[in-house]
Length: 140
Ligand SMILES: [Zn+2]
Image (tube, rainbow, N blue to C red; front, side, top):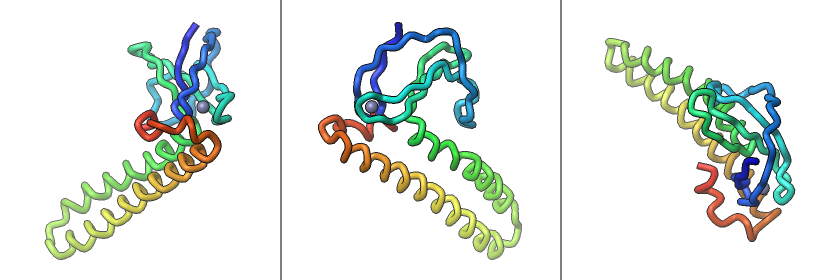
């Protein structure tokens, strides 16, 4: 028996992990296996229970919320690489110009992640306002 709290509404869940595992689409959680998927009975969000393949630690995510971060991850990584390349440009003026562009793109993606996650938190607060205390901390 495993027990855990919903990262969104803090509802306590008890569940049995039955040896099944599910396809793991999350690029940032490659070293984990999804052992269970369920819907929280209180906030109705989809949750996934992961086990770390090396440490066996459990990780619970609110899928829709985490996916926003996960989807942006590759884009951010690509832009970081682009930035590395830009830093190699010898002409200072050229470098500055390209650097500003790439930094702008990075900020844009970060803003999108934070805006989209914030929308989900707001929606969840409307659904269960009494459970929303500490939600931001639980999800970070
Ligand atoms: Zn919940």
